Amino acid sequence: MATKWLLLEMFEDRRPSVIAVGRSPKKFLPLERIIGHQLTLSEVKAAITEVGATHRRVDRISSDGSRRTVAVPLPISSRRLHGVMVWSGPPNEALPPRDRAGAWYFDITAGTSTRSDELLDLMGYAPQEYDAVREHSIAAVFADPLTPNYNEQGTALARLVRAERGQETQQVWTIRRPDGELRAGHYSCRMIHEPGSDGSPRRLLRGITHDIGPATETPVAPPPTILEHRVLVASADDGEYRVIMNTRTLQMLRWMGPPMPGIAWEALEGEPMPAIHPDDIAVARAMSDGLRAGRTAGRVRVRALDGSWMALDAKAVLMLLDQSTTAALVTIRLADPVT
Image (tube, rainbow, N blue to C red):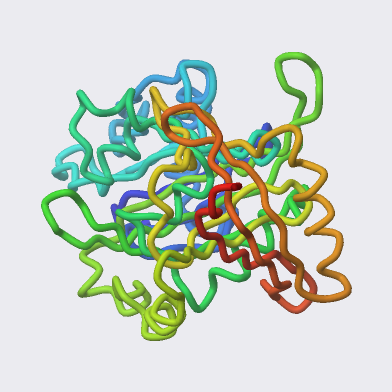
C-alpha cells in the first residue's frame, strides 16, 4: 500500500470502495485491488469496521506488532459517515500528512446542499462561519468560490436532473479559498434514493471532496475563468441575467454569469428559501412544458432577499446538458412596473 493515505467512500450500507490513494483519484475500486498483503488488508478492514461502528478515530497496532493502522472518519452528521481515510505502515514510520477531505450531500428533492465541517475547512472557511454557510441551495454550489469543470459540467448537471439511483460521478473542480489560494478538489459521489424522516422518498447525492493539491500544479483542474463562459456572459444585455433551470422541478441549477441582485437563491442562514410565487407556478410550468415546441416567455414573481416578491420577465430556451438530457436556459430581467 506504499504507506499512503487511502480515501474510501461509505455512502451506502455496503462494502466501502477506494476513491483515492494519496492524491491519486481512483474509480470506486475494491480495497483488495489496492492492498495485496493479507495482514495489512485484515488490519485495514478491521479499522474501517471499528470506525463505522464508533465514528471515532482508530489508531491500533497489529497483534504481532508489525503494523500500525490509523483510520479517520469523515462524517456528514453525528449519525452518518460518508467515508474514512486510512493509513497502515510500520509502527516506527512517521504518520504522513493527511490531505483535507470532507463530506457533503445534495437533497435533490428539496434543492438544498449540506456541507460538513471538514469540507468547510477544506474550502477555507473559519470555524465561526460554519453554521452560517453549512446549508445552501444546489445552485449556490456552482458559484464562487468553486469553479466547475466546464468541459464536464453538462454531465454533472444532467445527472442532477435525471437523479438516477446508483449513478456515480467523479470530477475535479477548482476551489478559490478566501486567502486567494487555488486548490484542486476531486469529488466522488453517488445518487441514492432513501426514505426521509417522514417516510417519503428522498433523492440524495452523497459525496466527498478531496483536496489533491494546488490547482496550478494539477493539469485537470479547470482554470478560474473559461473563454466560452466569458463569451456567454458578455453576450447578455445590460440588466439581463442567465440561469440554468431544471425543467422537471423548476429549481435553479446554476447561474451563467453573475447572479441577479436582490433575489433569494442561495438559501443561506437567515435568508428566505428560493421560491416562485404560488400563483405563478402555472406560468412557470407552462413555459417549461412549451419548450418542447420552441422558445417561451412569461412574467413570474420570485422570492426576494427581503422576503417580498419580485416580478421578472423571463425568456427560456431548451439546452442540451448531454446527449439525452435537457434543461432550460432562462434569461431574466426586472419586469417593468404595471401602470
